[in-house]
Length: 258
Image 1 (tube, rainbow, N blue to C red):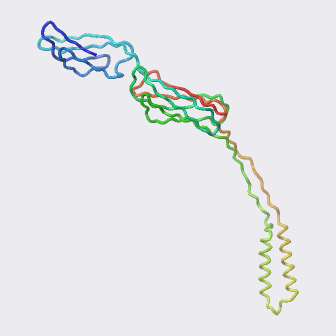
Image 2: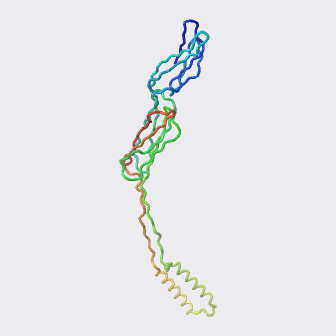
């Protein structure tokens, strides 16, 4: 914004300031009766703004002021998001979100993502995440959609044998005891009767081992997690601009789970 101060005599000197609403510029010194103001971005409100320049005066001229108007088109930004391919439950998908300036917007944008609607019935739904770091104008961010696969949990009971069913392990242990007992008999007293008795004992132990109670095994039904149900899931990306823009900027994309 250029302020020009003129008079009927010498070229005016001195200083000028510019105001508009709550904005007040730094003081500028005239050079050749002219000073150019640079108004910072996002200072003026969208619409028609009135600017007032005030001249301090010098040794030849008194103070003075004048106004002008400027039309400000609100600067903002837009979001666009790509549509991921169809995925199966348990898989993930990504969408690229692009930030584009409108009317010269400058600043950064922070993004969040959430599921906002679905055609699916039941199930775990789908999640959406996006990096929390700020995105520059013209930059991109990746939104990641996650789903869960169906899971069925079951209980398996181990086979439990009967107390007496030790098989030939039990028979072998009994045979060893019998054999040790036989060895404990002095050689002169070992007779065919004693040997016959030991053989009968081993046979009896083997028979008992084979008569143990049988074990049992079985399975029990468990809980089932249906995972992410088939359907179309719609996600909304929310943007927070710095500086703030109004209205809020959002974008949507959908993911189909088959």
